[in-house]
Image 1: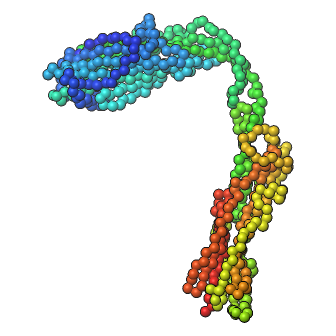
Image 2: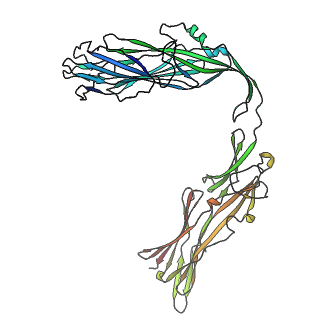
Image 3: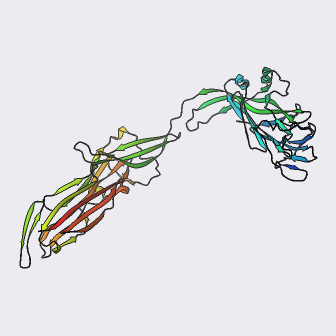
Amino acid sequence: MRTRLAFLFMPLFMAAMLFGVASCATDEDTTDEIKKDDGTSGSDDTETDDNNGEITFSIDFGGNSGDGTSTSPAEVSNGDTLNMVISQTSSYTDSDGSVFTCEPKAEIKLFTSVDTIYVTDINQLTNIQENAEVTTSHSGTSPIRYTTDQKFSIGGQTVNFDLAYEVYNYTNLANETIEMPYVKVNEAKYGSAKTGDAMAKVAAEWVNAAKAKASVTITPLPQTRATVSDTTLYSVNAQFNLDIESVNTANDTTQTVVFSVNYVGAVVTSTEVPDPEPTLVKVNYRTGYEWEEPHDNMVLAHYAKVFRDRYYSNGEVLTDTFTDNGHPIAYTLGFNNDGGWTEYIDDEQYSDTVTASTITSYRNEDQSIIYNMRSLTLSKPELLTYIEEDGYYQTSVAGTWSDYNTGKSYDTSDFIVADTVATDDSWETTTLASGWYYHDVRYWKRMTVKYTSGRSLGYYALNPGFYDQFLSLDGRLINFLEYVPEYNFDFTQETTSNGFINKFSCSWKFMERDFYIAVIDTIKQRQ
């Protein structure tokens, strides 16, 4: 059974903050096991003398000027927070004369959600939600910490009481579970005393009759509507009380603590004025792209995009999107002549017949990988030599703006021109008309195949490329040079049972997409 202990209730009000580490010990200064079965009740294993326990405590109001009485309530004003601590010394004398002590504590935290409430009607200031929103919980074993969070709603203001108290259990040598004396903090209630003043009377006393009237001019803030306002200020006072009581004593004693909460209530009457016209203060530009997969008779293509972010004085950001007409992938590859031919070599040193098969091709579904393939048959494959030539651009390089062609044009009356607006970017300036400009950039690299005698049998050719573009907008040249690819060429030769397999390839990345092209020539010895 739960043991009810005798209690010595000694309220001491202290000015200094008292915090201690809670513990339970015998008079021999040994720490004993602390138990509690379910968070609300102790063991029923034994009977205990009701007069063997006592408790003393002191209340620290955290520097508050009030002492918690009806004539001097503990006050919270202007958004401050009251942190109140009840420090306790709990003791119990067991039947064998052992004295057990512990130091539970209880806490009361009181605060408001805001220091000023704005309403449009004075009656809203005394609009009370009669029942507080209450959340309770407990945690731990010894001590068990019980918490209660109360939220009182008064005319848009929220008054918060965060309450907590600790309970220790002790199991003695006779395996009896003793719930030690402690101070319990009960839920707060409206009013200045526990006698229960009428709710309407309490509400009527909250609004101070003295009014402080002022004329206020409001400067519009970003994303707000401007008003010219007359504001009447009121001192709002709400009073609460709660009981703290001794538990597990011969004579459970209760003490009422009174609280006074003060804040400002502002009754606002306003005249709406038009929004000021926001001004464009900055523009920034971002590049992007979109791939269109092959379909019907269309090849893989990309569309370049520019996103222009417009920043306004009211904090609003609007984005314009500009898209070009699109461009197909750009590359060619293969051999310098068609397949299906025969060439006769007959000179002083060598004579041979060289036969080339027809050329076949492979491409994957999205056309990012392409092979051209053939086979070459001759008597002496080992007499072939391969000469890799230096690569070069067949066109001007990306960034030679004068070589770009006009693509998609814009009528400046269709969008906001921001040529005089600041930007965080460092784009080149241009006098070109607003619109898109493009350039087919091609690179050329080949490898010549020769008979040892010097007779050329043609070459492998790789011609990777891409379409570059830029947008002329707001007198700025928005380029796409960050996407210019780097080409990686490679030549490999694999030995087979009757010849070689030559692979001349190029790989690159363009707009975050991988591409690969290769010429594959299978060299066979005539049997």
